Amino acid sequence: MDENLTGKRILVVGGARGIGADIARRTVKAGADVVVAARSGADVRIDIADETTIAGAAEYLGTFDHVISTASAHHDVAVPDLEHDKLRAAFAAKIVGPLLLAKHFARRMPAGGSLLFFSGIVGWKPKPGTVVKGAANAALAALVTHLAVELAPLRVNAIAPGFTDSGIWDRLPDERRTALYDGAAAASLTGRVGTLQDVSDTALWLLGAGWVTGETIHVDDGTRHR
Image (cartoon, rainbow, N blue to C red; front, side, top):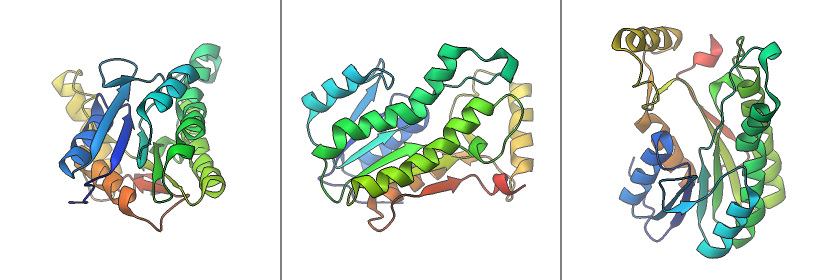
């Protein structure tokens, strides 16, 4: 996919690694002026759970055509083991953070711009131990619809990836990693795991899809249907 983003200014929150880093790389390649934000190791510091960093970055950085956030904070435990602070952090990353990004950046963005957030397949495919992640991801899908209505003509969308080879599993021993990937591929409809390109292609398409808003785009190889 060769979306032309020449002249566009894009903020990628969570762009220091994984999916966010690949989107940052692809949007630069497409001609955009990209600013990467993260809690550390990026062009600018934004902690999605700290409104002062978001407000300060918006004031300092100015106008963007598109704002993207891949932020997440997982708390994958059984209900009896839930920890209040980690539960709050998970919802801060998926719900409070996007709302605060909208609060501080939307009014500075042009009518043709967009906000793009990241949900995930677990919001539609429950399993034990992922109730927090699942609820937060599903709530984000509702949030983008409400934001799209309130912030129109600014567009607001989300991507919900399935199991993606994003680098987070590289630390696992080879045998365990292979078994994990084989299981994920077997659960999909075309028999493979997702790649960074699969997700980034969708992100670039959404940045230019001027008649798509309020939607969550599933990039999961149909796994949620099984």
